[in-house]
Image 1 (cartoon, helix red, strand yellow):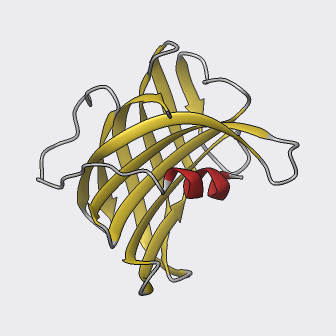
Image 2 (cartoon, helix red, strand yellow):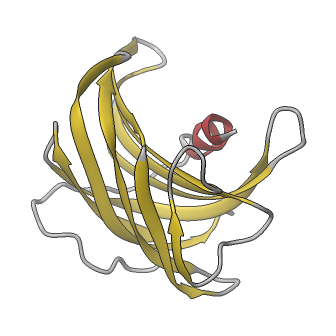
Length: 171
């Protein structure tokens, strides 16, 4: 179900940059993040929220999707999803495969016309999402994802992704 949400989110266009600045509080509809470990990157781009249902229509997931598009052929995506129809409440929520919330990070280089030439990813083993402000117009918070990065499905070392977001409902 997270992949479906990530795929839906992947069609959005966003403005992103990697200028080396520390992640701070993002403006409305934006996120900032830092990747450390097997990769070292600073990310910034669009942040939106929505709900999706599983392919079987039995599970509903509320997600925050964060997208940095460096070019038509390179993008980085962070997805934090929690079970349920609405945003998680203000406070800290654990992220793990067994929790109600999960988190992923992916870096894709390539395009549909030439094929994917590289894909790195992380399905968080541990972490948390902290919601600091919640309204119908936006969801504000921070996150930490930790686990083993994979590159083309092979282990590539430990990875930590931290950041902040001020996500707005997807239009």
